[in-house]
Image (cartoon, rainbow, N blue to C red; front, side):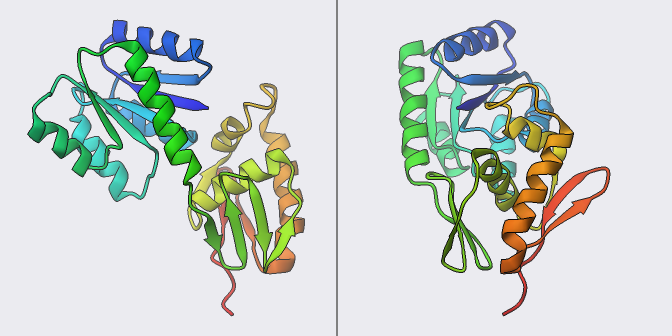
Length: 223
């Protein structure tokens, strides 16, 4: 599970990163909103821990922006803003949980585990024309026929379907597969894309290559 920590306090950011790594998470940590947006462009996260007092933007504004873009990454807000109105505002802007500072690390870790468990267990099936994919089970089917996909092929298909109709850059796909092979390179992505195409194109599902950028899952053929 990969977690993104967005916290401008360097000492707290380091503490959170260390604690979450000890709990078995892969952690990316940044100190401002711009870096958070960049990280979300190239990686998928099981959860984002978001401080509201960022140096370049208000965390509440960043959260609202993500939800307006359709980003569904679960978000746990960390903030010294502890009034009821502020907590309610955070939840209305799209936060999945809200923890006020100061906090105890065991409680934070328990909330993160519960939130990932809750959101991961209820992940919605993705549908793209005749193609269906279940992010929780990593199972895919086309026209009702199950597709036999390797773990890496399923991970790439997940990334493409999450952003169907949009460009997915190659570096994002490399990061998507990093849990299996840290030596995996861009050329290997092309191999898995080729394998996916052979399985999807008979069902009218096409992956377009955007030279110098990445790939795009095209709109499904009209019936």
